[in-house]
Length: 403
Ligand SMILES: Cc1ncc(COP(=O)(O)O)c(C=O)c1O
Image 1 (tube, rainbow, N blue to C red):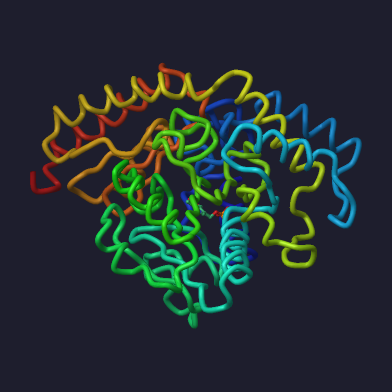
Image 2 (image 1 turned 135 degrees about the vertical axis):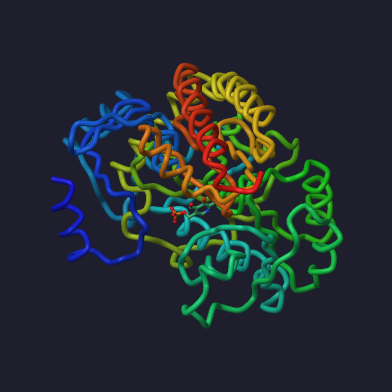
């Protein structure tokens, strides 16, 4: 069956993804089953989107019940589930108001527009520049490419809109140099994902926050990958003792169902007036019911505490690999947003792990990335590390790299 899916996929779908030769038909918790009946341990959970794992009962129940009642109405009416989700997010974060959309890139587009509109209303149209960080990833729309640092994503798609520039992540002097009187926003992932699973330095973030306050620059945190309990707190900013002015969410917010959100402080949110921004599907009853069920479960269960515990165990296990193999350099990230930095290219290790029934990923060339579900069990951590150990042993045995 898989061969015909691949053949027809090549014929009928655009060639935008480098895919492994597999298709899944079922998922439960941290496990996926393919078309041939083989089981895989999913340590990447749909690139961090399936926060509660596959087909968690609170999510499937919410979808079934809401789908039978009402799936979609336009935003020209009030949407009860959207209001409830907004209230829950606001009551559990720094923010005062929420806007809903369908994806991460869309949430970042809205955040950029909001920051510009806020500055425009207060200072005029010169204050429109957004500074993003080196190694950032904020999406693939034409606007978000402007704040995504890696040039490979931009090549062939220019012109990219103006008004974006970059400062070196975790380097306050570089940021100070980039700031001008035209800067309206500083945008970053508190823990970078695609760029190599790198956490912001706490001192750097405190200094950034102080500059933002002094110069009335909005601090925009992209928590699309690192938010929603993944880092051992409900939101990643809580690890740093500072608050952004705007935060974007997506991925795990709907635990596999597409939804994005922008959360902002009242004064900032006020910049949007009817007609300034919108989207047809954003915040519809079905998407919001799904996110509401996900978020209620996470908050009631204080799932971030379990994440912190599992993450601690994972880190200890990975450190043993560092002790054993000289070319395995360090554990990166925070909570269950985990990177294992190697001195060698990681993509073939992803392929080897796949052959052993474990789904992982590699980013920034040499960083193995794990974004498992938040309900990951310790036995699955153990299994992952055992498989990695076996692969690493084989790598050394074959001496297919300079050690
Ligand atoms: C930090 C971050 N921002 C934005 C995005 C874009 O989200 P989406 O793919 O939902 O547009 C991603 C996706 O990987 C991400 O990791």
